[in-house]
Length: 306
Image (cartoon, rainbow, N blue to C red; front, side):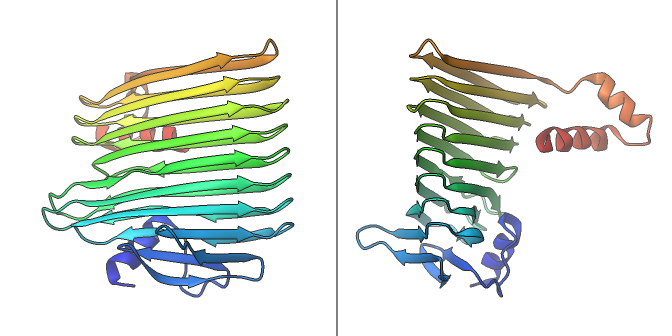
Protein backbone atom coordinates (compact mmCIF):
# COMPACT_ATOMS: atom_id res chain seq x y z
CA UNK A 1 0.00 0.00 0.00
CA UNK A 2 1.21 3.52 -0.72
CA UNK A 3 1.21 6.37 1.81
CA UNK A 4 -1.99 7.96 0.49
CA UNK A 5 -3.83 4.65 0.84
CA UNK A 6 -2.69 4.37 4.45
CA UNK A 7 -3.91 7.92 5.14
CA UNK A 8 -7.28 7.26 3.50
CA UNK A 9 -7.71 4.02 5.45
CA UNK A 10 -7.26 5.97 8.66
CA UNK A 11 -9.97 8.41 7.60
CA UNK A 12 -12.58 5.87 6.47
CA UNK A 13 -12.06 3.02 8.94
CA UNK A 14 -10.24 1.84 12.05
CA UNK A 15 -8.39 -0.86 10.10
CA UNK A 16 -4.94 -1.78 11.43
CA UNK A 17 -2.25 -3.56 9.45
CA UNK A 18 -1.95 -6.27 12.11
CA UNK A 19 -5.72 -7.07 12.03
CA UNK A 20 -6.16 -10.83 12.47
CA UNK A 21 -9.57 -11.27 10.85
CA UNK A 22 -10.84 -11.21 7.25
CA UNK A 23 -10.09 -8.23 5.03
CA UNK A 24 -9.49 -7.04 1.49
CA UNK A 25 -7.83 -3.70 0.72
CA UNK A 26 -8.49 -2.31 -2.75
CA UNK A 27 -6.08 0.28 -4.15
CA UNK A 28 -6.64 1.90 -7.58
CA UNK A 29 -8.60 -1.09 -8.86
CA UNK A 30 -6.23 -3.79 -7.60
CA UNK A 31 -5.87 -5.86 -4.43
CA UNK A 32 -3.32 -4.39 -2.02
CA UNK A 33 -3.88 -7.01 0.68
CA UNK A 34 -6.25 -9.87 1.50
CA UNK A 35 -6.87 -12.34 4.27
CA UNK A 36 -9.66 -14.80 5.04
CA UNK A 37 -10.55 -16.24 8.43
CA UNK A 38 -11.83 -19.61 9.55
CA UNK A 39 -15.45 -18.41 9.22
CA UNK A 40 -15.19 -15.72 6.53
CA UNK A 41 -13.83 -16.59 3.09
CA UNK A 42 -12.94 -13.85 0.57
CA UNK A 43 -12.45 -14.81 -3.08
CA UNK A 44 -12.05 -12.88 -6.33
CA UNK A 45 -14.96 -13.04 -8.73
CA UNK A 46 -14.33 -15.01 -11.89
CA UNK A 47 -16.45 -12.90 -14.26
CA UNK A 48 -16.37 -9.36 -12.81
CA UNK A 49 -13.98 -7.14 -10.88
CA UNK A 50 -14.76 -7.69 -7.23
CA UNK A 51 -15.25 -10.20 -4.46
CA UNK A 52 -17.45 -13.00 -3.17
CA UNK A 53 -17.49 -12.95 0.63
CA UNK A 54 -18.96 -16.06 2.27
CA UNK A 55 -19.77 -15.89 5.98
CA UNK A 56 -20.51 -19.24 7.59
CA UNK A 57 -23.77 -19.92 9.39
CA UNK A 58 -23.57 -19.19 13.09
CA UNK A 59 -20.53 -16.89 12.88
CA UNK A 60 -20.64 -14.47 15.81
CA UNK A 61 -18.79 -11.28 16.67
CA UNK A 62 -16.38 -11.17 13.73
CA UNK A 63 -15.48 -8.18 11.56
CA UNK A 64 -14.61 -8.08 7.89
CA UNK A 65 -12.99 -5.02 6.26
CA UNK A 66 -13.33 -4.24 2.53
CA UNK A 67 -12.27 -0.59 2.05
CA UNK A 68 -11.35 0.82 -1.38
CA UNK A 69 -8.98 3.69 -2.12
CA UNK A 70 -8.25 5.74 -5.23
CA UNK A 71 -5.01 7.64 -4.72
CA UNK A 72 -4.66 9.73 -7.89
CA UNK A 73 -6.58 11.11 -10.86
CA UNK A 74 -7.34 9.29 -14.11
CA UNK A 75 -8.73 6.29 -12.20
CA UNK A 76 -12.29 5.05 -12.74
CA UNK A 77 -12.65 2.11 -10.38
CA UNK A 78 -15.69 -0.19 -10.56
CA UNK A 79 -16.07 -3.14 -8.20
CA UNK A 80 -18.79 -5.72 -7.48
CA UNK A 81 -18.81 -7.24 -3.98
CA UNK A 82 -21.33 -9.91 -2.96
CA UNK A 83 -21.86 -10.89 0.69
CA UNK A 84 -23.43 -14.26 1.45
CA UNK A 85 -24.32 -14.29 5.14
CA UNK A 86 -25.22 -17.68 6.58
CA UNK A 87 -28.15 -18.51 8.84
CA UNK A 88 -27.87 -17.09 12.34
CA UNK A 89 -24.60 -15.23 11.73
CA UNK A 90 -24.03 -11.91 13.54
CA UNK A 91 -21.15 -9.89 12.05
CA UNK A 92 -19.87 -6.40 11.29
CA UNK A 93 -18.86 -5.39 7.77
CA UNK A 94 -16.76 -2.24 7.37
CA UNK A 95 -16.50 -0.85 3.86
CA UNK A 96 -15.88 2.75 2.89
CA UNK A 97 -14.04 4.54 0.12
CA UNK A 98 -11.55 7.36 -0.15
CA UNK A 99 -10.69 9.17 -3.39
CA UNK A 100 -7.70 11.49 -3.77
CA UNK A 101 -6.35 13.61 -6.60
CA UNK A 102 -3.68 16.29 -6.77
CA UNK A 103 -4.09 17.15 -10.44
CA UNK A 104 -6.78 18.02 -12.99
CA UNK A 105 -7.80 14.43 -13.68
CA UNK A 106 -10.94 12.82 -12.27
CA UNK A 107 -10.79 10.18 -9.53
CA UNK A 108 -13.86 7.94 -9.25
CA UNK A 109 -14.96 4.85 -7.37
CA UNK A 110 -18.21 2.97 -7.88
CA UNK A 111 -18.86 0.08 -5.51
CA UNK A 112 -21.78 -2.26 -6.14
CA UNK A 113 -22.47 -4.23 -2.97
CA UNK A 114 -25.05 -7.00 -2.79
CA UNK A 115 -26.13 -8.59 0.50
CA UNK A 116 -27.86 -11.96 0.78
CA UNK A 117 -28.87 -12.56 4.39
CA UNK A 118 -30.17 -16.00 5.29
CA UNK A 119 -32.70 -16.74 8.03
CA UNK A 120 -31.94 -14.98 11.31
CA UNK A 121 -28.70 -13.40 10.11
CA UNK A 122 -27.65 -10.00 11.49
CA UNK A 123 -25.27 -7.56 9.81
CA UNK A 124 -24.04 -4.19 11.01
CA UNK A 125 -22.61 -2.37 7.99
CA UNK A 126 -20.40 0.72 8.22
CA UNK A 127 -19.59 2.79 5.16
CA UNK A 128 -17.68 6.07 5.21
CA UNK A 129 -16.79 8.11 2.11
CA UNK A 130 -14.30 10.95 1.80
CA UNK A 131 -12.50 12.96 -0.86
CA UNK A 132 -9.04 14.48 -0.35
CA UNK A 133 -6.32 16.25 -2.33
CA UNK A 134 -5.68 19.72 -3.67
CA UNK A 135 -6.23 18.95 -7.35
CA UNK A 136 -9.03 20.42 -9.43
CA UNK A 137 -9.97 17.01 -10.82
CA UNK A 138 -13.44 15.87 -9.74
CA UNK A 139 -13.67 13.35 -6.91
CA UNK A 140 -16.68 11.07 -7.41
CA UNK A 141 -18.11 8.18 -5.41
CA UNK A 142 -21.29 6.37 -6.51
CA UNK A 143 -22.17 3.50 -4.15
CA UNK A 144 -24.92 1.03 -5.00
CA UNK A 145 -26.34 -1.32 -2.37
CA UNK A 146 -28.76 -4.17 -3.06
CA UNK A 147 -30.01 -6.30 -0.19
CA UNK A 148 -32.21 -9.39 0.10
CA UNK A 149 -33.23 -10.18 3.67
CA UNK A 150 -34.66 -13.60 4.48
CA UNK A 151 -37.07 -14.09 7.36
CA UNK A 152 -36.01 -12.85 10.80
CA UNK A 153 -32.82 -11.25 9.46
CA UNK A 154 -31.58 -7.73 10.23
CA UNK A 155 -29.40 -5.33 8.27
CA UNK A 156 -28.30 -2.11 10.00
CA UNK A 157 -26.44 0.39 7.83
CA UNK A 158 -24.50 3.43 9.07
CA UNK A 159 -23.31 5.53 6.12
CA UNK A 160 -21.31 8.76 6.33
CA UNK A 161 -20.03 11.29 3.81
CA UNK A 162 -18.93 14.56 5.37
CA UNK A 163 -16.56 16.34 3.00
CA UNK A 164 -14.50 16.47 -0.15
CA UNK A 165 -16.62 14.46 -2.59
CA UNK A 166 -17.60 16.59 -5.58
CA UNK A 167 -20.35 14.34 -6.92
CA UNK A 168 -22.12 11.34 -5.46
CA UNK A 169 -25.23 9.30 -6.17
CA UNK A 170 -26.05 6.89 -3.37
CA UNK A 171 -28.47 4.15 -4.38
CA UNK A 172 -30.00 1.57 -2.01
CA UNK A 173 -32.46 -1.18 -2.91
CA UNK A 174 -33.82 -3.79 -0.51
CA UNK A 175 -36.39 -6.61 -0.35
CA UNK A 176 -37.52 -7.90 3.03
CA UNK A 177 -38.91 -11.29 3.99
CA UNK A 178 -41.12 -12.05 6.99
CA UNK A 179 -40.08 -10.28 10.20
CA UNK A 180 -36.92 -8.91 8.61
CA UNK A 181 -35.65 -5.50 9.74
CA UNK A 182 -33.77 -2.82 7.80
CA UNK A 183 -32.30 0.19 9.64
CA UNK A 184 -30.41 2.89 7.77
CA UNK A 185 -28.69 5.94 9.24
CA UNK A 186 -27.28 8.32 6.64
CA UNK A 187 -25.22 11.46 7.34
CA UNK A 188 -24.08 13.77 4.55
CA UNK A 189 -22.42 17.18 4.43
CA UNK A 190 -21.67 19.04 1.21
CA UNK A 191 -19.87 22.33 0.60
CA UNK A 192 -18.72 24.52 -2.29
CA UNK A 193 -20.28 23.26 -5.52
CA UNK A 194 -20.61 19.64 -4.40
CA UNK A 195 -23.72 17.60 -5.21
CA UNK A 196 -25.12 14.57 -3.41
CA UNK A 197 -28.12 12.46 -4.37
CA UNK A 198 -29.71 9.74 -2.24
CA UNK A 199 -32.15 7.21 -3.68
CA UNK A 200 -33.81 4.57 -1.47
CA UNK A 201 -36.26 1.90 -2.62
CA UNK A 202 -37.44 -0.68 -0.07
CA UNK A 203 -40.03 -3.37 -0.69
CA UNK A 204 -41.56 -5.06 2.35
CA UNK A 205 -42.90 -8.38 1.13
CA UNK A 206 -43.17 -10.52 4.28
CA UNK A 207 -45.53 -10.14 7.22
CA UNK A 208 -44.32 -8.03 10.18
CA UNK A 209 -41.30 -6.56 8.44
CA UNK A 210 -39.92 -3.21 9.59
CA UNK A 211 -37.96 -0.38 7.98
CA UNK A 212 -36.44 2.74 9.53
CA UNK A 213 -34.66 5.19 7.19
CA UNK A 214 -33.12 8.31 8.71
CA UNK A 215 -31.12 10.84 6.73
CA UNK A 216 -29.45 13.91 8.26
CA UNK A 217 -27.70 16.31 5.95
CA UNK A 218 -26.05 19.72 5.84
CA UNK A 219 -25.79 21.68 2.57
CA UNK A 220 -23.23 24.50 2.76
CA UNK A 221 -21.85 27.00 0.26
CA UNK A 222 -23.41 26.56 -3.18
CA UNK A 223 -23.90 22.81 -2.80
CA UNK A 224 -27.02 20.86 -3.75
CA UNK A 225 -28.59 17.69 -2.35
CA UNK A 226 -31.48 15.46 -3.33
CA UNK A 227 -33.19 12.89 -1.12
CA UNK A 228 -35.72 10.44 -2.55
CA UNK A 229 -37.05 7.47 -0.64
CA UNK A 230 -39.75 4.98 -1.58
CA UNK A 231 -41.11 2.53 0.98
CA UNK A 232 -43.51 -0.09 -0.34
CA UNK A 233 -45.64 -1.86 2.25
CA UNK A 234 -47.06 -4.91 0.50
CA UNK A 235 -48.22 -6.66 3.67
CA UNK A 236 -48.69 -6.12 7.41
CA UNK A 237 -45.59 -4.08 8.20
CA UNK A 238 -44.18 -0.87 9.67
CA UNK A 239 -42.12 1.71 7.80
CA UNK A 240 -40.62 5.08 8.72
CA UNK A 241 -38.66 7.57 6.62
CA UNK A 242 -37.14 10.77 8.00
CA UNK A 243 -35.11 13.42 6.20
CA UNK A 244 -33.77 16.38 8.19
CA UNK A 245 -31.56 18.97 6.50
CA UNK A 246 -29.80 22.19 7.49
CA UNK A 247 -29.04 24.91 4.96
CA UNK A 248 -25.95 27.08 5.37
CA UNK A 249 -25.10 29.91 2.97
CA UNK A 250 -26.67 29.19 -0.42
CA UNK A 251 -27.03 25.45 0.05
CA UNK A 252 -30.10 23.77 -1.48
CA UNK A 253 -31.96 20.55 -0.65
CA UNK A 254 -34.80 18.77 -2.43
CA UNK A 255 -36.45 16.10 -0.24
CA UNK A 256 -39.11 13.76 -1.61
CA UNK A 257 -40.09 10.88 0.69
CA UNK A 258 -42.69 8.56 -0.85
CA UNK A 259 -44.89 5.84 0.65
CA UNK A 260 -46.93 3.08 -0.97
CA UNK A 261 -49.40 1.04 1.08
CA UNK A 262 -50.52 -2.11 -0.71
CA UNK A 263 -52.12 -3.71 2.34
CA UNK A 264 -54.69 -2.44 4.86
CA UNK A 265 -52.30 -3.36 7.70
CA UNK A 266 -49.31 -1.47 6.34
CA UNK A 267 -48.35 1.29 8.79
CA UNK A 268 -46.11 3.85 7.08
CA UNK A 269 -44.84 7.29 8.16
CA UNK A 270 -42.61 9.87 6.52
CA UNK A 271 -41.14 13.10 7.85
CA UNK A 272 -39.09 15.84 6.19
CA UNK A 273 -37.71 19.05 7.68
CA UNK A 274 -35.43 21.59 6.00
CA UNK A 275 -34.27 24.85 7.50
CA UNK A 276 -31.42 27.03 8.67
CA UNK A 277 -29.72 27.05 12.05
CA UNK A 278 -31.86 28.90 14.56
CA UNK A 279 -30.43 32.26 15.58
CA UNK A 280 -31.08 31.64 19.26
CA UNK A 281 -28.87 28.54 19.13
CA UNK A 282 -25.98 30.62 17.83
CA UNK A 283 -26.58 33.32 20.46
CA UNK A 284 -26.68 30.79 23.30
CA UNK A 285 -23.35 29.24 22.31
CA UNK A 286 -21.74 32.65 21.80
CA UNK A 287 -22.60 33.57 25.39
CA UNK A 288 -20.42 30.60 26.35
CA UNK A 289 -17.43 32.16 24.59
CA UNK A 290 -17.62 30.61 21.13
CA UNK A 291 -17.26 32.64 17.94
CA UNK A 292 -20.13 32.54 15.46
CA UNK A 293 -18.17 30.12 13.24
CA UNK A 294 -17.36 27.86 16.20
CA UNK A 295 -20.98 27.90 17.33
CA UNK A 296 -22.19 26.96 13.86
CA UNK A 297 -19.68 24.10 13.63
CA UNK A 298 -20.73 22.84 17.07
CA UNK A 299 -24.42 22.80 16.12
CA UNK A 300 -23.74 21.00 12.84
CA UNK A 301 -21.57 18.42 14.56
CA UNK A 302 -24.25 17.66 17.11
CA UNK A 303 -26.95 17.50 14.42
CA UNK A 304 -25.04 14.98 12.32
CA UNK A 305 -24.26 12.78 15.33
CA UNK A 306 -27.83 12.73 16.65
